[in-house]
Length: 80
Image 1 (tube, one colour):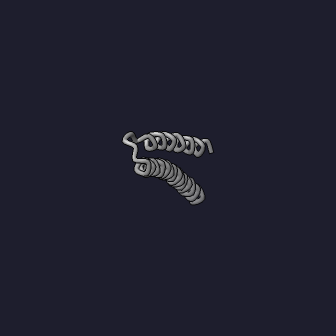
Image 2 (image 1 turned 90 degrees about the horizontal axis):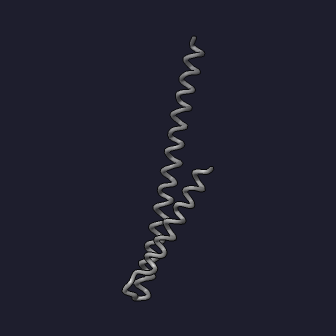
Image 3 (image 1 turned 180 degrees about the vertical axis):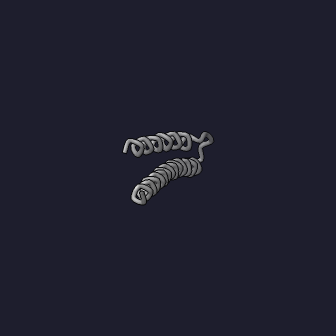
């Protein structure tokens, strides 16, 4: 009997650990996506200020590229 209870506790602990590992993995992906998008938008803003254009061309283009890169990175991580 004690062996069965010990076995149940171990399996419950493995399930809890698996949930924490998945949580950590997905939250890491979120931070990575946010970082990519923030860096590309910041770069676009800086380039627009350097050029002095009235239309934020670099901000728009780099933000779209950043979102695309973030989605690509997330999909690549999800496939693993």
